[in-house]
Amino acid sequence: MTLRLDSRLGGLLLALAVLVLLNIAITPNFLHLQTLAVNVSQVATIAIVALGMTLVIASGGIDLSVGAVMAVAGALAPIVFLSDWGQANPGLGLAASIVVPLLVAALCGVFNGTLIGLFGVQPIIATLILFISGRGIAQVMTGGNLQTFSNPSFTWLGTGRILDLPVQGWIALALTLVVALVVRRTIYGRYLLSVGGNERAAVMSGVPVARVKIATYVIASTLAGLAGLIVVAINSSSDAARIGQLMELDAIAAAVVGGAALSGGRAPIFGAFLGAILIQLMGYTLVANGVSDEMTLIVTAGIIVVAVWLQRGRRT
Amino acid sequence: MAAGFRNAHIGVWVALLLLVVFGVLRYDNFASAYNFSSFLGYNSMFVLISVGMCLVIMTGGIDLSVGTVAAMASVVAAMFSAHGLIVALPAGVAAGFVAGGVNALLIAGLRLPPFMATLATMLAARGTGLWLSGNRTVPVDWTSDFTKLGMDRIGSVLPWTIVLALAVVVVAWVIVERTSLGRTILAIGGNAEAAHLMGLQTKRAEVFVYVFSGGCAGLAGVFLASGFGAGQPLEGAGWELAAIAAVVVGGTLLTGGMGSVPATVAGALLFGLVFNLLNFENGRGTISLSAHWQSVIRGAFLLIVILLQTRLSRSAAKT
Image 1 (cartoon, each protein chain N blue to C red):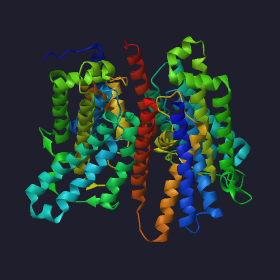
Image 2: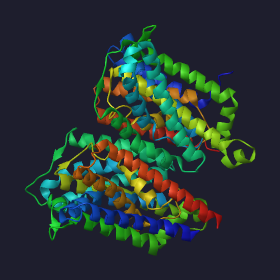
Image 3: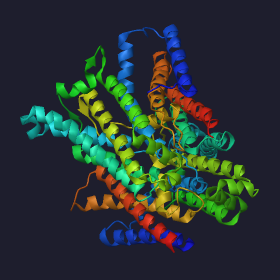
Image 4: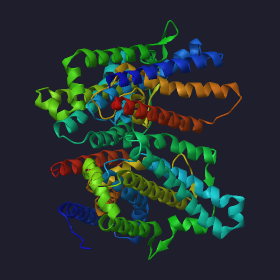
């Protein structure tokens, strides 16, 4: 696999390099391992969700439900390992508390994908359903209560360190490589780009469009579920009202800053990864230098506009 | 095929009527003046943003910024509330117009995709609202006449806000059904390129719908501040999606080119009514559904509507 550095990826790397240099110059204690760890730990979940969002956008769709799916998965995990069965079988309980939420998240993806792929419902509307009711389902499951717990093996997912860096950062990196490989090297990847590029042509040439779409939403939801587990692990508690809130916006922003076009047909996976990092680092730069949160929002809006505007000229 | 969509429009009115009849028969206080008045007062905000959203969606666009623009406008209106309604109301609406103008500039001027452009404005309006308010709720001046708009009732029943909202609805309806601007709006949604080639002023129509939607959101923000006695920079989360849902429930397709303003109003009221009925059901004490169930049921309701519409439009396409 040759890693082609197209000009957009180059531009992102350049922007990142400028930001890093700027921070070295003006931000106190920027070159500390702790700074890196904090940023990695904050950006990992956004990057993971942005990978799935990039696939969905590549198919010509959008997924508004990722934050709600995070809440469902995140609410479910403690329920599983805090149950009587989970406490009696800590090993199995731990495994189930990861597998079951991921399966349920995948089911949410089946729901989205079926509405979109089989019933032809527009993605923004189809995923709006789980956006509205998903968090409610999570809150019903927990009775709306904050679940706190102490389970070191589970919380390792969010607080552990490998080579002094947060586990979830490594997970995000590994998933980026895997998803990029899937897009470039598998038939699914080729189908995905053809569905997003020209759906009618894809149908005519025998691409199983509905199945490709369902698979895409399943991947996006499963990744969102994983991100939900990580958030719960970081906090050692699960609050269904808050997990993954506004994540859909962060993930869409990261994917688009990374070069995804809402019209579909492109899946810049590394771009999404770098896009998430760029937005995170920009936010960190502003906050670490005493710029208020509200200004950070306005600057993020500006970045999105610039990124989309730059991309506009590339449409052929 | 037009008949199929007309049926969809009638469907939402029939559903609204059935739910009202159900409510009147089942719950003692449902038909009370108090419930009528508070229901319309609260939902006037959603009627407004839904109508703005309806015009935007007719052009094939989307406006994700309405919720945070309303929140920002509520802050602006509250800041000017000491000068009375005559100043605070235009100030809040103007804030909405400005945000809508930014959307129009990005979409009609720079040709950015509406989804991304209004996503950016959504964040920027939240930031601006928080900045203006100093990150706090802004209390209104209770000595001026500002809160009368949101709290007074005509004949102690009919909220002023719903009257104003319905006036805006009528304006939007007349524009869509009776003017060349309205025909252009629908033509853009049907086929933007063809509309442009036909010499229609597509850019002007696009600018209009986003500025109009911003103004509706601004007025909704004024209602918010006036009705609840505070400018609330953090309100409005998810309002854009409630508005989109109302438009869809009203039978307007997201691809644009067709749609109905009155059916959107019915969609907004229908969505609010689901909440209202659930509150009454809880009040009877036979079942007790927590607040969390409300969003679950709203989502299920949206699912049913979408599946029905899919069937309707498919059978319409077949004939």
